[in-house]
Image (cartoon, rainbow, N blue to C red):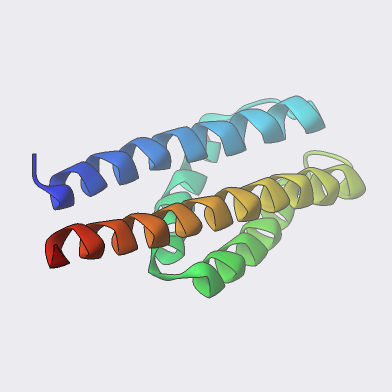
Length: 118
């Protein structure tokens, strides 16, 4: 397999896991009832995920907007402090995850360059 295809497969898999984790974590923390219209947030997650692939700064910005989007979307369905707290917890976990992914991508980029130079 070419490296680009592997990267694409890993990116798609991590998007699915990321969206599932964010939804599941939020609903478990806040005890908000799931509604079908909540799936519209998935569009934001896809945009946010691709934004986070650019670099770590875009990832931090995407996490910040995620907190705002969750807060505005769920403010009338649960206690506001609970929504904000759950959103912040998820954003912190996502940011740590993005830092780890970026470090691993950087390390693999150097490894691939080292292998091609030899």
